Image 1: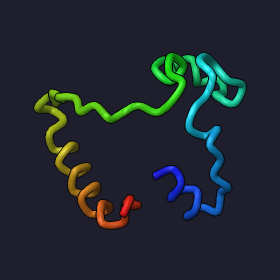
Image 2: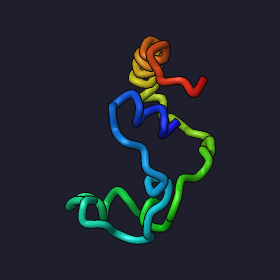
Image 3: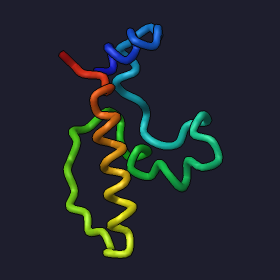
Image 4: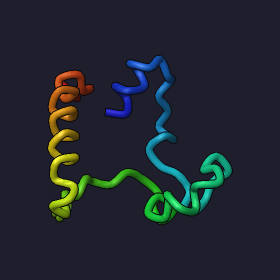
Length: 81
């Protein structure tokens, strides 16, 4: 998928894009310490792990609107095949 994205955006793919050093990096910016805990522990991509989410009833309407927008945009996704 990364190769395909690079092609679509006219970026030269390099093997070194597939791994990185553990820890913080200068390009993480000031928000890195709040957002990147899991990333800083990794050195490469990992498989997606589905999580069970529990949504408070107060937010069900917002969730439904978001799902509708997601479903509408889904047809424009980048596919691997």
